[in-house]
Image (cartoon, rainbow, N blue to C red; front, side, top):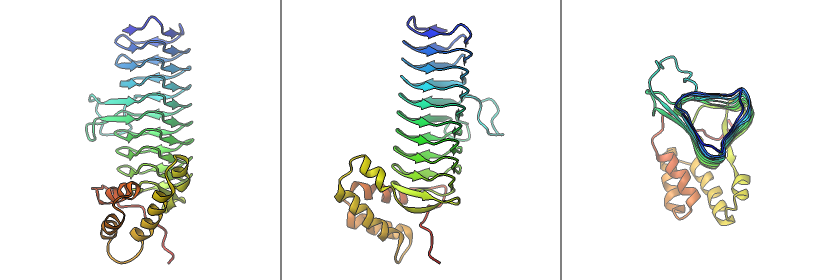
Length: 269
């Protein structure tokens, strides 16, 4: 066990041999830190937090009471093999959140990026790859093998099906069931989610210029309407708007390999 001299640890907390506790960590009452856990500088566990498994937590991340971080995956095929969990810096992991490590059937590691907010009761499953500045609202669930891009917002009580890819800057409405890939900057809406348009508010909040947004809006209509297959229309949009980085993000997402289909706008029929 390696505990930095500046760490403050409540006497009721259990730190297993082998754990590494960084400088200026604060660990409140009745927490458990497992033998293969590394807490970066300034990490704070408020109380009744369990961090176990082969887990690394980045600097200044804070974890609220009753969170379960690093316990074995919720996968019946898991047989105790060595897998990992990495959580980035400056995350806020609220009450009763659960995050599972990877499996050998996937990448072997679950990753959560920097500056993420995981609200009460949210869940990140095994082998998920979550980008930076991602927000999971209360009780949102990300299944195993899911990829979430940067700056994604997932609404309360929504669920993302295993192997789905959610592109950067997308927003998923509350109570949505997302069973297909969501394009970058897209909006996924309704209980059986459809592509309800673009997350224009999110782009404006991040200071994206108006011309780029207008180009993305034009390409959206060209990609999801008209003749030809979806990939053919995406290629045409790339030829027409190739200098627009937002359009390139969407087109590259659509042309990449996917284990699922793509979320589409709701048909008028």
